[in-house]
Length: 422
Image (cartoon, rainbow, N blue to C red; front, side, top):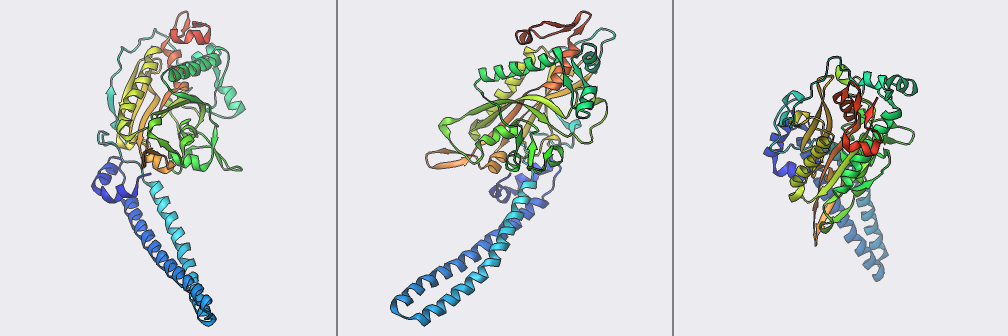
């Protein structure tokens, strides 16, 4: 959530930033009007309360002097003031609610380096693939055919158990999933990230804190009986560990990681890009999350890009990095880099990671501050997928297929216990 001070004091910057997202200033202007109204109501209530307090002190003096009639008159005046105060308090509460809801609708301001644009077609290639794209032999198969041939996952069984987009992994396919999770967690903890195993459902406050609500409300599964949401990513519960906290600057950086399944409705998805494991409603992912001093967050962002690059290089997967344009960024992001791996059989780039800096946007919603002595200020938060498994599995299967089966990347073999799927 953007700070009111920024909306008021940097109107030109806010307007230019929102223009990169193709968003106008309607909600910004409304927020300023509501904030002015909130202040005026508060001033009026404070004046009435101050007058009532002064009269209450006089009542005590009247009673001590034996002037009961004068005390009763003052009591009547205090009662009238309190009666006047009640509707003002109710109106003020409504104004505050309208202001909060308006602020929650305003997206984050993109970093100055973020290109303007409307959608994925306007994204910039930040880093080209550092290695040549693999050329597969004639008759190479897409991963969904490989999964069926080697009995690695079953899409039809997922439909039977739950519905479309819920694959069932089996045999070596299930072990490959487990191996990837363990490998990604081991790499993260080796680089100083503390591992968490968080709940897979969160309350509305947690979803709102990281920006999933209200922006992604239609994309999340909602357990309405208990008003809980299935998490779209581990970012939500892990970042909320520090909701409402004041972190001493000496404790920074805070580096956290965690594995969870992720649940996304992906309503309206269709076409060849969603076949097989390309886009599913439940998938496994390891997430890395950081809390940083504002002056350190962009160095941390580069460190996170290096971490994800290292994972893909160790898996020997061809990848590239995109810098997302303003129109393709998430609601909460200041700047986002997407990692895409090459799916050789489909001849498609598949997104497997987003690494983002949110600056103070999430911290303001979370009321997450850092302190140094008596000074307190909002923290910067960052997160990244390290990595999302479904598409990584698809790419491993397709890129490594050969006449004698599917080769397992060397770094995974200690985890799988086998070098080839055949």
